[in-house]
Image 1 (spheres, rainbow, N blue to C red):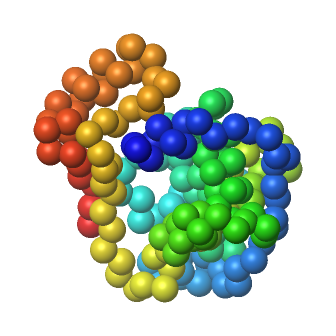
Image 2: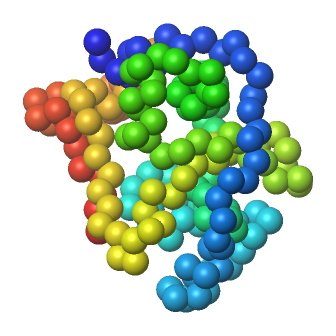
Length: 180
């Protein structure tokens, strides 16, 4: 079964989770080596090692780094954002006993609930582990895997736009969006 299809069927039935901070360290320590970055939301800065996707300050939605070192990914509008949050909540639920979901924990960034700034409490971000944090010069590649780059519930216009944008994806089954 196509994993995006399976995820598309998740139902939102649990309250939003805010598990708070669980990491130590500081982005300031990391930024001291690589130069200074201007602070944005409550000390959060654009993710310095993002290689593709929506960039904070350029697009409305972007990826930020929290002062504690976690990555903040803004929740997309429904149904995609709530579905993604529900997915992480299921995988990292304390009472999770599904062997497939437990195995996924070894392949996903740790999930620390949601975060929002006091100034914009309705703008929710997923709070995730920065899996590159322990590396001084991480090699990063953003790859779309699969033959389709659109959600199974996407509109005809979105499907058509994605097929035109990535014409060889159906044939080769993946697409490299960025790397460094």
